[in-house]
Image (cartoon, rainbow, N blue to C red; front, side):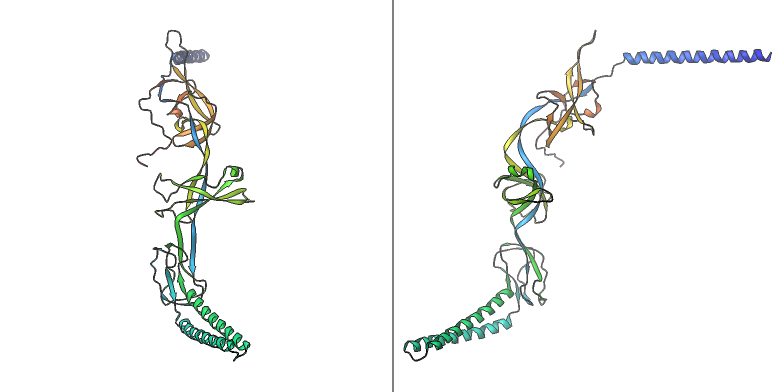
Length: 378
């Protein structure tokens, strides 16, 4: 009796499980059938054609600015500062007085030396007249001439000392921060103030040795820097190329001169430099937004005509095409391989597409791509 009840329970469970399994299999089959019949709606995209253009050939580098003339004014002799007639940060001219050291002792010595030189000159003239009449020997005349030269040399030495203690600007430029005070005794070689000639200004940069044949003195350069207003470009020319190559880096140093009328560029700043080569190069360009960037390879989506299905209409689909990219300028990037001119491709929103997906082109809201974009909120 117990065995019959047990077998009936087992049979009932098997029947229930079978019914549930059949129902679920029927549901899954229906879903699979509907999934195969369903179609993904086409994606709305913007399109553009790959356009051949002619770009300037540029060699870019990062440079460092350097004053055409720049020194730190120092004291040549030890002495007490009695006058500082300049204002820090001002523009001065060559020969302007910067610092006057105490020269009272040297001035007194100079008066004595000048008096001695005047007396020696009178003695020489008297000896010359007496020599003409044979009153004195020729050796006396030579002695008088030597004494005059010694007296003049002594006076010149004192004048040189006074000149060294009267410190003047060696060239025109802009002064820095004053580092001495009135009454201070400054020693030989002690810094007084920085003087920099800022207009024009040098920019030094390095280029690889393989680009040396492309460098020529007189080639135009374009300079941009964080120290300039946004999008401002300053033009200049290459003025010097080092004759030797750095053995450690295999780079060669190039120097260009650029105008700096507003003195926005200062020595020590970095700058982005672009050397403009005379020849131009043809390139095939597409918007940078048309590229799907990936670690393995970059790609674009080419728009092609789809074959019409039975009872349907023809549409457009995208085909993923791997490309090799070159230089980027503004909103565009150059394509070196993988794409042909005039091919139509998706210009925006490529990250949401997959190979073979249907698309609908709508360029009503397509952005305007420029080589030199100027964002309004930039």
